[in-house]
Every structure is written in C-alpha cells, then in structure tokens.
Image 1 (cartoon, rainbow, N blue to C red):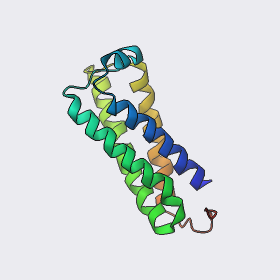
Image 2: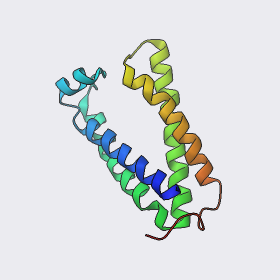
Image 3: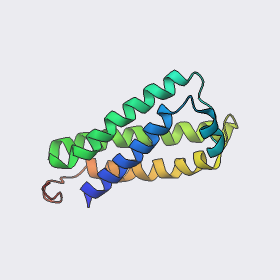
Image 4: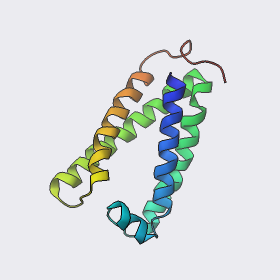
Amino acid sequence: MIAAYLRARALLDVALGVLLLAATWDGLYDALGLPLPRPELYAQIAGAALLGFAYLLWIAPRNDSLTHAVALAAAIGNALSAVILLVWLVRGDVDGFLLWLFVPVCAVSATIEGAIASRRVAMLVPGD
C-alpha cells in the first residue's frame, strides 16, 4: 500500500516535472490556464529537480530508512507548496482551476507522507 502510494506520487512528480521542463512552451501553459513562468529557467530547474525526486519516491519502498526520509522530504515539500499556492491564489496574483486543485492535493499528500514518515513501515512494504 505504501509502495503503491509513493510510486503514484512519483508518477505525478514526473508529470509535473515534464510540465515545468516545458516552461518555454507558452501555448501549453495557455491551454492549461496556467500562468507563464518568467524566467523559464527557474521552472525548468524545478522540473529537473522534480524528476530526480520522483526517482527517489519510486525506489524509497525498497529500504525502510529511505522510505522514512523520502516521505518526510515529500511531506515538507508538499506542505510548503500548498501554503505557497494558497497565498498566491488568495492574493489574486495568479489564477487557474488547476492551481486551486493542487492546493488540496498537496495538503492531503503532505498529511499522508507525514504519516508514512512517522511510523515503522518495514513490515508493510512488500519486497520488490
């Protein structure tokens, strides 16, 4: 169950990472109703980092200590992302349905990952 969750989060991070890597593709961002990242360089660096972190999420279930550490890092990142997005959206600096959707997704993800990080998961994770 934990392995399936972390791997699903890895796939979501891959999708978001690819979207950020495509930051120079204005038509894609317009079609999705997302604000254009300026300068694109920072979005592309964030996309590259997300792809690297997605790999860690994918392999984390192989080792109990890695599962705890990666889940905690993901919880921190998702909690901060939810707060940052909410502040920008409430202030009206950005808008878009997808961004509003990401706030609860990030908050729920942070809660689940925090729970994973806070308990022993060795016997819950099946071998690869």
